[in-house]
Image (cartoon, rainbow, N blue to C red; front, top):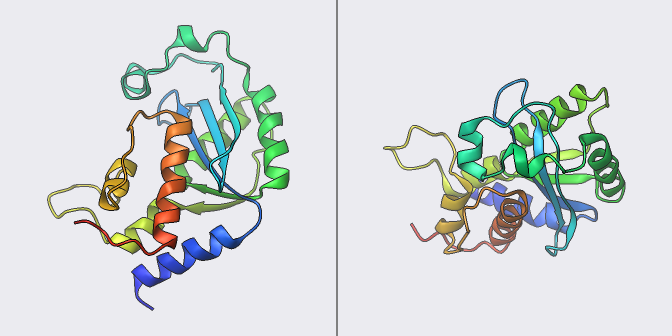
Length: 190
């Protein structure tokens, strides 16, 4: 089976399942001690099931602030991870299939944040839309050093716009739109 066909069939299969959600996080950075500072979870129709800032236990790296705009001052009054974690677990009890764009990153940062608070990480059935889109579209242009397309680029390939805000709800919605576009077999623009 051709990779594009395999990705299309995956998207159709996963959207036909009950209990699918789209998740995205924003974080203090990308290292092994960084934490989740924003999380959003949407159902397959785009309804927001969870959207919250999270108060970190360490400062947000300046480079991360440049990307998502979330500052320590803005997060100072946000709920701590244990409170948000309980809400996340409640959502995942009803929606055990999680799709994320770069799922390995979100999964790792959620696990790290849980570890920081002595909590077991949730164990839903994770699926990576970034890897599936790479099957659907092929690798980024030859002049790119990356193996995978950025989310905004992937959406552009379908002619879909994305605010590229690097905020959790917008990115979860972009991931949802991307998987729906693959499931419909939409042609790529370039």
